[in-house]
Image 1 (cartoon, rainbow, N blue to C red):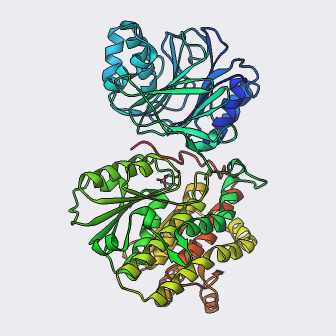
Image 2: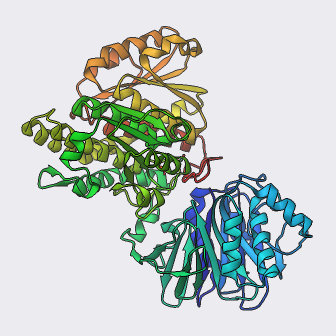
Image 3: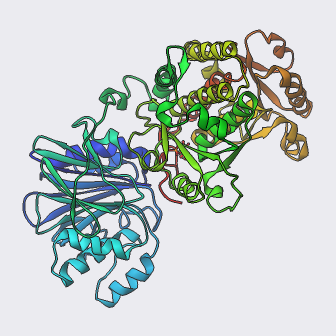
Length: 622
Ligand code: G6P
């Protein structure tokens, strides 16, 4: 994963780099480093383990590192554990210790991705006298670039393209060469990288929020391209070293959206942004009371021709797929398979003709989802990406895109992007139902109206968050929590459980309520918390029975249900109500108390809510 940044211009680079890294810290936070050049041949490299704040303290918030050209990195360890020596930047020259200090190396670089054949390349470089001080694949790439640069006496662009031909894997690389004091060279394959320009300054970063404060004009460098970044201008080259032209894209995201705006954590802010995220996403699809999918290429004719839908995604986006499966199957009567992208890509499941593969991804960069998309295209499926980040790789490679309009999401645990995805998939399901003649125009109109009420209903749930805050403080010492539900309620339980475990570190599991008795119920002890999701009227009593089975074995029960089901209080110890709405869409509401439960539990335990241990927001490795 990792986050990389770069700056060259007429201001001091280090504070700008640190500011950018702060906004990318969600991508990795086990160590960080900077390399800054002050016009001359030398680069000053500073690294620190742990949170970015350590690096900021070590450099006096960047003030101790003079220079107007630099690169920075925040790391999520893959090759080599988290340590000073493995932290980036890495240098081509020989150095002792951690690789920090003033270095006169020909090449200094940072990298996001994984170089698969790094051991073989390292052997080669060792034979040529290179000495390695870290365990990282990045140091190998930096030294390989240096090797070609010197061996063939070619310029940086050609040295980089030669390296790109030799390495296998994924990378976003930012490199500085001793002989080119004000320039940064970048290359990319399957790891995200954008380049922004402003007057007299250029920026590079793994993601938009890192540079939003300085510019909105960005280039999306393509796979297997190289960029030569100078103050205020950028040139791009293909693998042959020929110059190519890329379009400049204007980012419409508001810079304030990447700030906490008074909230204690990004996650809480993003939970509160859900009404807007859902509303904006729906407004982009629903025009004058009609769901318009023309831009996604899904005409009614295409929809009618479909024989199957495969939804492929990872993490919470996969949970959205699980929920959408129930809605699409029920409304549009179309078979839906939901696959984890990391499994789908290695299976050879037959794909009937006219299969639509929908890849759901907030970042549009998740390595497994991207690979699954490519597999689907190879097998001849029509592909649709439901993506939040404009211009991301998945968005660019899919046949069609449906953008969610959640804005930048910073907290590692997704909330508003999840809700926006859910709303987009619900709207898709409704249009599919109409196109396939499964609902009347009148029902169609009614469902659209219901969708339109979701943002305000989410807002109402958020107004009552103090009860959840109180309850979370009571359960903060729990060891195990089980989330159960049937049908759509099971899909929501999956997300509720993930929110809980990823940020509170409390072990939690989601189970289809009916499945509990086939093994898991043996884990229920006195006081074990079981959270039942009870929004589907046809399944309500069955799930309540399963909860009672747990209660009779000592479980403590929380129920999330819809307004009016007050009899739930006869069974559960703590009840939460969400407004009534069409049951196909109620998952958008039921998930909110579960997000708050995870959030407040994490806060009660004094944890770093926005940056939970071992996780990264955008998983660009397999
Ligand atoms: C990571 C994030 C999750 C996210 C998943 C898929 O694990 O922590 O919140 O759901 O990746 O990410 P994507 O960007 O593809 O939606």
